[in-house]
Length: 143
Image (tube, one colour):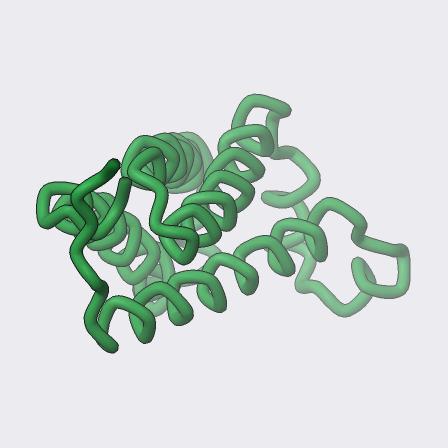
């Protein structure tokens, strides 16, 4: 028998938002992974160069971040304690990808300072989801 605390309505709202956020990440990853020639023609040349020259390990970090994020959100919705570990793996993927993007490319020059908004938001949400899933596990919501 497990001691389980009934989740509040905010738990469900946060979990659903986490699922939607991570689904958007998966769509972004798939969109980049399966760029057609027509899609490439619409991307500015300097941005396309960054995408096309991304090494496999950085692309793998992107994949890890989004797929583990999606899995973490599903595990959170199903109230599984392993969600916190899965979100942590996702956060590591986010950080590895961003280290590549902002230290090994000219992404900041290409996208400008406004290009920092999405990465900062992504890291912030990643940290929040790790913290929140740990808090839910500690509170007995996750088993």
